[in-house]
Structures are given as structure tokens and as C-alpha cells.
Length: 410
Image (cartoon, rainbow, N blue to C red; front, side):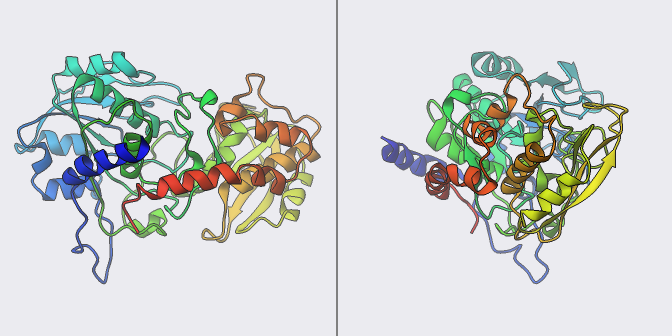
């Protein structure tokens, strides 16, 4: 069944995928995004189409003009609507919020809210907008629980239900596409921070994820077109791209944040601060009553590519707002060796060992973030970092084999 579906997708999707060229691979290699290639091609894939776009503040050109403004001003594309995800199209909302329905003051275009909408209700929004083709262009950060990839998934399914074409404009995975890491989600834990069984750090670009979703998880394939990047290699961190960094969400200020996020976001499932309300979210972790013993215990793990510093900070919002707490700051000294998910597990294990006040959130949010109960129950049972990480390796190996079939870049 799976082979026949993949064969069908190979006959349809591959025929409409704009191939990468070698023109951008010069002595001074720089990444050309999917949007840059689309525009250079005169928006040919959108010719004769009424277009709507799912995007946010990261949908920018190299000179940081928003692509909605660029496309709206270009007679070669008939842009009719914008669809805003979590935090909104222009980025005015904090975590867990959106901008609602309004007309964009800069362009006059109607902006529709997609946050927490899926299935037929989202398909009805696409239908009401009057578009023929839905375009997706949002910068991801490489973690399963970062919700933009599930906005992609939901929009693909809704476009299928509404009878729309779907075009994905690719951007780099800022923490490389070298490999997948971490536990694979179990379907009974499916939520908006993880719809389908992929690994915690997926190591894919949004276009590759779109192909994976279409081939493995959607009820039926949507007519899909991907516009690849040029000049990007799987080993590239974001700074190698030469592209400007626009925070994809308020607590993702730099590519350094993205580097640690797929591991330390797990602290959202605990009573410790994950650094929200500081200038280093997800790099600073702590709580009242923690002292230098945590950093010492974490350093004793000899985790690759990272050191831990005893740190004290006072969050301006979120957990422990206005209170001085103790904890650690993560200092990555070798990005190539660093494993964010193993590091996150090591920090959870040692925090529980050295701080008697450690507790999981009462709603077991940690299980939704890890996609299973095993991480929580193993740590509660006193398992070591290696034992927790070893527990998911079999499922991770199976996902890596599936993932390999949808990779666009070598």
C-alpha cells in the first residue's frame, strides 16, 4: 500500500517540483530561498492562479522586505489573501495567540487566521478566500513541537479538502539537516505540537516535510509543488546561508536559540523556567532553590559540544516573573558535535537528581512534547541519560529510513 502511494507521488509531485540548478554553487556559495527562485522564474508556477499565502514575519527577501509586500506590488502574481499562523502574519501576538481576521493596512489584502484551525473549518476559510493556490513560506527551526510545521500539515490537508493546489517555498533548516534525533511521537499523543510520528529533531526542511506529509500521513495526497533552494547543504548551519534571521516567534530571537530549542523546550513540561522572559530563552534554565550543583552535575555528564555555567536570572514574564532564580546557561562550543536532544535529557536527569523541588507539569505536558510516556517514566525511575536516549533508538532508526526517501538535498 505504501509503495503504491509513493509511486503515485513520484509520478505527480516530481513532475511539478522546480529542480535545483547548479548556478548558485559558485566560489562564494550563498543560499537562494524558494521565494527568490520563484520570483526569478517570473512566478511561473502561479501563472493564471488566484493566490493565497500562509506566512509570517520570516517570509522576507534578502533585503528584509516582506514577500507579501513584494508580491502584492508585482503584476506577475495575483495575490488575493494572506493566512496567518500562531503569532500572526505581521507577528503581533505572543505564544498561544494570533491576530484574528482583519485587512492588512499595508496592502489592503484580507488576512485570515489559521491558528488552531484544521480540517473542514480551515478548508472553508480557503474556499471563502476565493484562491486557487495556497502558498506556504515560513522559517522553521527544526523541532517537532514548533507549531509552524503542523500549520503546514493542517493547511495541506485543508487545501486537499477544498480542492486547492499547494506550493511550498523552501527555507533552510537553521540547525542543519544532517540527521534526525530524539524520540518519535506515538499517535495517541498527537496534538498541535506533534500531529504525526516524526522525531523530536527532524533534520528536514519544510519542503521535505511537505513531501513526507503527502507521502506518509495525509488522508490523500494534495496537488503539491515544492520550490527548492539552491546553495544549501545539509551540513549548513544558518549563518552559512548568508540570509537575514527574522525571529519566527517572540522567544526565538537568534539561530543560537534554535540550536538548543529541540532539547531544552522539554523544560516547558516541568516547573522550571525555560528562560522565557530573558534575553536567552531556552539557553537559560532554572528555578528558585537551584544552585551551582546543577551545572556541576551537568558538566560531569561530558555531553559533546557543550559546557554548562552556573547562572542566575530574573524572568520579566512567564514562570518566576520578577523573581531571581538559579540554574544553568548552556554554552555550545562545538556545534557539529552538539546533540540538543541528548543535552535536554541530560539536563532533566540532573535537575531531578540535585533539586528536591523538581516536578513535571500537572497536565503531563512533557508527554506531549516527547510524544510518549517513556521519557517521563524512565527519568522518574532513576534512569541515566544514556538509558533514556537508548530507549527510543529503534523507533528513531525506522523513522530515519522513511525520512531518507523524501530528502531533496544531499
